[in-house]
Length: 171
Image (cartoon, rainbow, N blue to C red; front, side, top):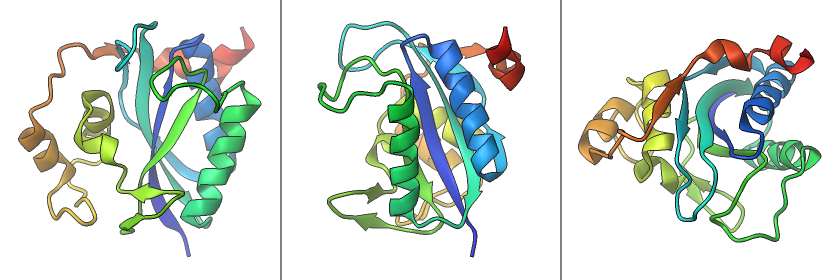
């Protein structure tokens, strides 16, 4: 049975290239890829280059743990290092934000991902992609969560999605 998963995608190391690669690889591997608007925003928690962030939804028959492992292999294929501080530069960062109706908290995966409630660069694109989706375990729509959270979105600069199409990788 297929489930809808929402994934946060970000990069601040050659971000235009790495975000485009992530979109292309996810589109090749999973059905019904949909993308939120794409934003440039400052690094959070450390002094670093700006990030490019968006949220994608996919349809998958993988379990949440198998999807997490697949995403880790994708990140690592493009140079993601795991032995660095939590708040540091990222070549590619792809996190499961929501997975169907699943609510869980175990040593490998927490769903919904807590960052979606605390960071504008996660919540805004997620709420724009699926505003009427009810957040599992919360009961509010993503649009309601965005309104209630009242996060400062002024640092999010919209980007032209055309520059992230797969053909841009072949320049």
